[in-house]
Amino acid sequence: MKKKLNYLILLITIISMVGCTNVEDASDTDRETDPQEVTTVNTNSEKEETNTTDVDVEETPSQQNNELFSGYKLIEVDGGVLSGYREPNVVVDIGYGEREYWAFTNEYGQLVRVIADEIILQDDRNEPVLSSGRYYSDEAKVPGVESDVLDEGHIIADSLGGVSNAYNITPQDITLNRHGDQAYMEEVIRSAGGATDFEAIITYPNTETQIPSSYQYTYTLMGNKIIDKFDNVNPDEVNASLGLTGSDPSDSNSSNTNDDVSSVDTDGNGQVTIKEAKAAGFSMPITSDHWLYPYMHDADKDGMVGE
Image (cartoon, rainbow, N blue to C red; front, side, top):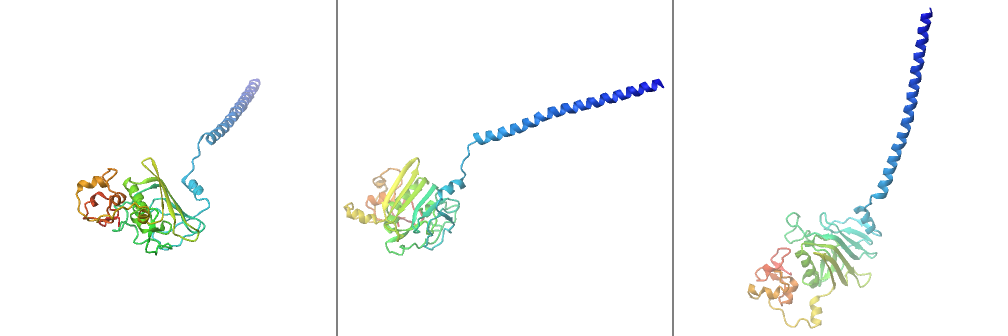
């Protein structure tokens, strides 16, 4: 009986010791776990604060456009729309395809500004270009273009990737558009393979007309900033009034030899521009049978330059 009692006492003692050990282990585990949880939270917090402080936040194109378009309503207009009406205080993309050329109107519906980060030349191999060298068969009928002396002048030409709706067209003097400063500027950009930082500012004599009085173009070619500013007038008449046309220009198809191209190509780059040809006394257009034709750029490939 006594031996059984001793066994019972021993069993109770062992059970008591095991229970105490489990309690202590659990207590130790709790003490170790709590600091780990706090550390994890603090680490995440520190990472979040570091990311917020150290990482530079860059503006997305959408954010930049929102600032650029502030005060204007962004609308979409098909590039071939012939209507001459423009909505006031709007901005329209007038670049063909994926190009982004932005045109702005004022409160009177006048086209006053066109900008483009990059001018991308027309790609007649991969784009649906007509035989005329244009994307569309006609241009928007902006009030004023019905005049015999005014063209449907592109701010950004087809050859430079511009469309033909009213947000890229202004009534422009025929000679200025086809043979003058406008044509010369377009030729310079084409010859350079494009341009960057392009901006056109269009000025009007009053708030009622859609016929500009002057243009100013700013763009960058091969790192050089260029500013072209000219009035919307016939340059030949201006030159005549200034006494700069001393003699009648020779016939455009007059005979000559290729050796004389150096006297026409004044900058010696092997390419004769319309301005250089006219300065040398040649009238426009220069046709495909003329000796100068191979040295000139025929944008629409119709066998005539400066038509």
